[in-house]
Image (cartoon, rainbow, N blue to C red; front, side):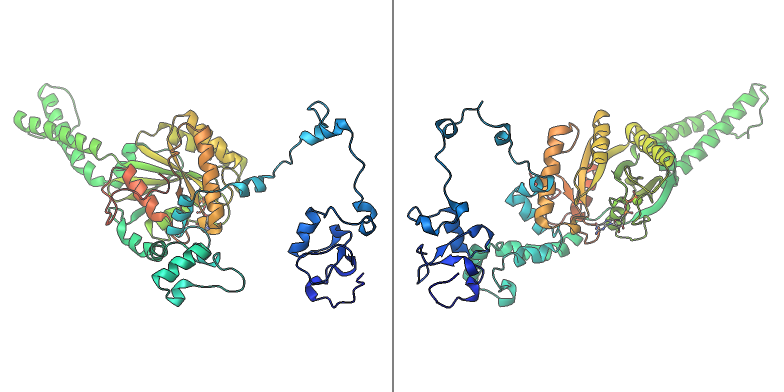
Length: 457
Ligand SMILES: Nc1nc2c(ncn2[C@@H]2O[C@H](COP(=O)(O)OP(=O)(O)OP(=O)(O)O)[C@@H](O)[C@H]2O)c(=O)[nH]1
Ligand SMILES: [Mg+2]
């Protein structure tokens, strides 16, 4: 209760009945004393008081709860390890969320995320965060001079002007930077429940390669039939008159064709991940055609291996997901077998891209799957998807956490960097395209850079 009779401002109303006139308070004109501070919502300067009670406080102003405890015994003053209670040894354990929040991502990574426009509202984030108090200063609205920008940058932790500029322009530049050879995938080249052979796929993708070979084979068979009929063997084959020289030429041509087929073997890129992680959506964004693969918000839509041809050189394989899905247990086991069979036996498979949801990081199903890949000595690249649904700092934390785990646990993970994409905003897609082309040894049509832009190097 106040005994001085001064008027309290609204700011002091919290202290209400707790103030009595004995302890001098620095920063106030009049003297007050404080009792039972523990329940009060205090202004900042009182918090300091609470932590460091003044030594000269008179005993009359103290409530019973604030009376100092009796002098501790010598044993209690210097506790030996054996005398300490077990509860004293227990550190308060951090929850998973707290652990996650305690990760400090590198500034380089945060910079990369901003530059690529990844993370929810990434562009506005970097600037909105810079606002303090009630004012939101947007430097580009005000057209600040370079000096003022520098000042603002220091005061409000803005990115350098160049960074901000790049952030606004990369998207436009990127669109022109990298292109797939034929620009578009040919959707549904094949869609199968069992693993097709490499040759069967090539036959579907490039029938022209096989047409001539088949003709040569027919001719040679005919010539064979003629020779056999010449030696009185009964045969129904069509007989064609070809001299020996011609036959040699045909055989040579056949060899050439076979070699050509061997050389034009299509390389494959597999997209795997948990159900509903966004594999099919990513494929659509990658190809810039929304109807390439079917997409659903219900996990378990893709139920077979889908092969999509890109240009004449490689194929992207969209797979069923693992983990939870709206499907029968039997079906899920079949998919699992199918995926494992494909991944472990394919010779033309160049790289496996494992999609991980940026909101959740590595889940148990992911870890099991990665362990399976590792046990089969299969190299894989992790891609964080749905990056538009997490804030840039959390995305950076997820990145750091996943990368650390990959480095620690999996020998065959490409732990140099992770890729990050958002199929909705298209952010990071260009990097993924470059990576695919680079992996397949294709010429990358890059205007400014020679190699895929690194996230972390
Ligand atoms: N916000 C956001 N949503 C996404 C993104 N990518 C996919 N989605 C959504 O995630 C859901 C699942 O997408 P799909 O592409 O069907 O996922 P999938 O991995 O192919 O799923 P399965 O075929 O069942 O294994 C859909 O509702 C998409 O709209 C993304 O980048 N951002
Ligand atoms: Mg799918």
